[in-house]
Length: 310
Length: 242
Image (cartoon, rainbow over all chains, first blue to last red; front, side, top):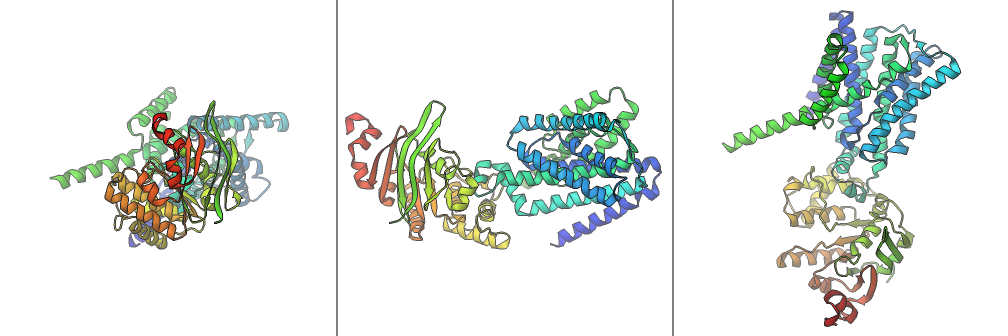
């Protein structure tokens, strides 16, 4: 109990320090911090669903883009907080429909479907913009500074981690562990497997939608090719896997170094960026399939066992 | 005696193979019944259909007059059916107590928190695992895993308990304890259907037996009579022994 309180105090202090960071940094630094917090949130939200269920979702950018587009379409018509709520609800609605239709798909079929979903949404939005509204791109003029976007993302990241922490201690967290261990046993002990998966998918997708919505004013101009860029989905997966999708802090520990690395790579090797991304993807899946956090835990345990043996 | 489980015209086909063919029988409330038959006769397939792990090709299964066939396994569990598995299924990433808590937390009237932990330890004590709740399920011996699995099945306070060769693999002393445990469950009003190869246990426990061979029911009745039936003996031992 006291350890939990100390943990919360430390995390609170860290958040406070992070919230003050923009005053110490220039525009470039704030931009970097903003992008990094965005990916920390995306990877953590992705892992909420994909970590325990082991369903690799490539639909991240579908929801991210839905969030951004909602802001682009509604920002002139409604006050900003209401736009965010609407974006979240749209993301939730899409997640429930998609989840009901697809969570029965197993393994690789789900991966392909989720990738297809992102492309489908992008093509639908493109078709609508070209044929109905007549313009492909949209401008977002909202008086929101980079620092304000960063604060919102920081808040959302904290909420995401809080949800992850809460799930791990709740009945739904136990249900996830049981499902991960043995689905037959899970069903026979009375766990409604599809409902648990659907709930997690919906929570995860809603957060991802909100990341897209919050980041939208940063671009000023958006079009489907920008906000539905599949690289976002791939980066999210690789970050979460590097850190460890089954640990609370894993996705964050994967997202921070990889985000900085990719920033540096895209600045210095813009032409080879995709190749390096692909190679890193393969390397991570082969070398640390369960993530660096789990690897560190294993090494730590082994070292302690050795000590005990001597 | 009122019937708790009623199976009518049950059939299961896997492609061209008929694993269970037009099987009907019933189990009375508070009874221990045996489902017997040589290997591959379809006993486990029948249990799988009762618990919802498989859905029947044809026929109906009713629990206390209510049709449960074609329900999802978690719904059937909530109606009061629990089971153990022929090949023990443990939850390896959890502790022994957590294995039982999992069943308590998702039964029809769920228990959670300290009450669930307390109840889990009581159940473990009941099956002979007192004080072992903190161990990892993975580290238990095969027999202890079977005990834990029974505790998990009992956690749901089932009306109907399905035991799939739960007694096999026990040594003579353990077998005695196991038989006494099952008797005590019946005395509390639980109805039990067991698939078993240990005839000593079947004779000691079961008032009635149903025998299957190659997917068909070949005999049903009081255990002693059924086991003396020439058709049953020839199914187990071959034509020459009948």
